[in-house]
Length: 339
Image (cartoon, rainbow, N blue to C red; front, side):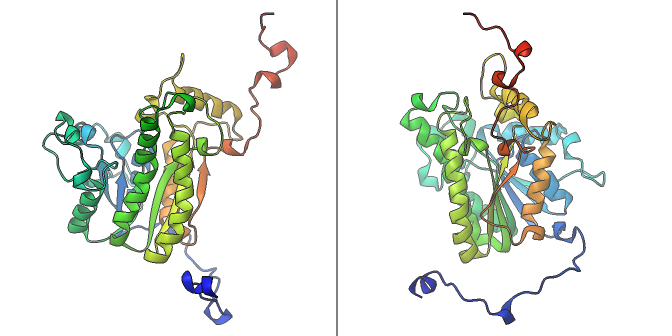
């Protein structure tokens, strides 16, 4: 009883249970007309953030985004020049409109957190108000309330280093930019989210299994993100009636992912080839696959779904054996190994 009182747990009597409805109009929950969605981490049209924004826009949502200050001008110029027009096409033939682009550096919560080395950096010249709290205040001033919050950003400065060679500074930087940024984002935006709203982030299977080449503490950061998803689902659900989920997406050759080095191929090229060879569904993952799942999770169709890590990876995460491993080959197919 003491625990029930502490967590405000009320017993559900039969008379209070909601009846099961079988008369809902198919697809009705995907209507986001009148909803406002803020997507943090959009800087081009190749990543999952853009795909999610486009699917939400296709369902009628107003789209506003937060972009990392060093690439803000390039992104805004691309929008003005129409560089992303083809990728902005909606199902009715119209184009997605990004109502506003805010500068956002999600490793800073408040103005006083920004060091002089950053505020005076030429890549931040002429910009202000890019900390999480300031952006939340700006969105509140412009839109009052929002309904959907998407965390589509990550960074690990030492991502190409094995964990054994990662510095404390690099490890903590990965956690700050890739995990705590989600906590802070929800912390500052939840008060301006309408009840029934949805928070969504993006994770990766390296949180659960070893992915060589995905280093620098990034696997740890993704594990933190997934653990925080469950805790935040409880806390934000009780405090703000907001749902919290994360999508564990398979490999996509986005601009950010392509920056991770490798051998003859980049890390992401190896990951894509491995997925195609070993996943139950032998197809390349499209950004729209994640966009469609995000639309579901951000809509009323998923109003009873929270605290979940949803895998969108052609099923690769369910596999326990690599089918293209040398040990799985017939003898005549195995490469010759020098004695």
